[in-house]
Image (cartoon, rainbow, N blue to C red; front, side):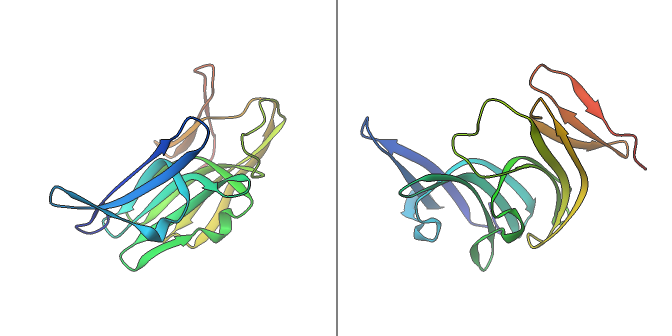
Length: 165
């Protein structure tokens, strides 16, 4: 939701191709949401009552991971994430979020590393400051900020914890 507007995102498939379907919900009715174009949403993060992040896939002649910022004034790409792949985000509740992303925008994402991942703070969907950049053989899958430390979730269930201040 953004303000009092609820959005619904999904897809349909004819067995060969998948088609993004994005709607605004009013009462019990669905209305097309053309601002999204051909963007398949596979995750959402509410930054504040006035904005949220959608992560997904740009559907075109090729498929490319992408992000969108949804605000009261409309939908826009998140420019600092151009050419990157957002893995996870932790909204901080005040318009900021901790982001976990990797360099590159290949779809589907390669199975093998090494991976150069970044943890960054996104402010108001526009300004981004990297906090950590590291290259590993294993791609992290989630991020959290708890007790003044970053926590990275790994695919085997391990949690890596930063020692920062």
